[in-house]
Image 1 (cartoon, one colour):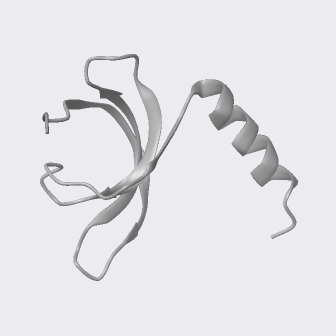
Image 2 (tube, one colour):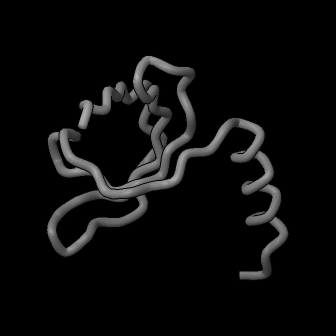
Length: 73
């Protein structure tokens, strides 16, 4: 299995911390030297290990923002 290359271009913030100390963050990440995408997942403190997550294009992030803004929470 080949290694996955990633480069965190920008951190937008942290949402929570898991019991094992990993932090759920929203970042702009370039995966395997491709165009950066918005990424939501847990990372260890050194940002060397990560959980499964969700990546979104800018258009998808805008649609998600609209959906969240319309929610009555």
